[in-house]
Image (cartoon, rainbow, N blue to C red; front, side, top):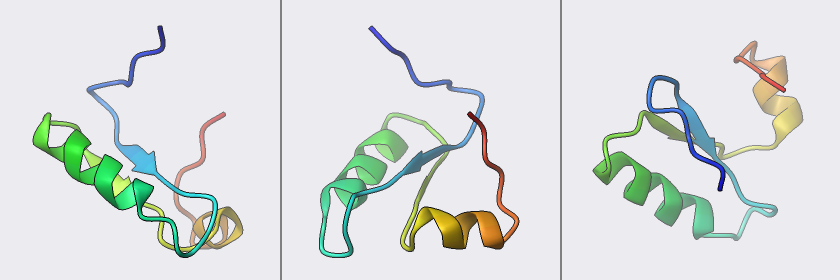
Length: 55
């Protein structure tokens, strides 16, 4: 089973602009104490903004 790191920011995202799953996931993770951000735009926009990318 994969576990999320509790010492790093987690990014929740969906596959399309009308998906609400990332919003719900971010809320649940935040309630459990994770540092979480929702990716509102696409991955290229995230990377172009100079935000961290880890593979």
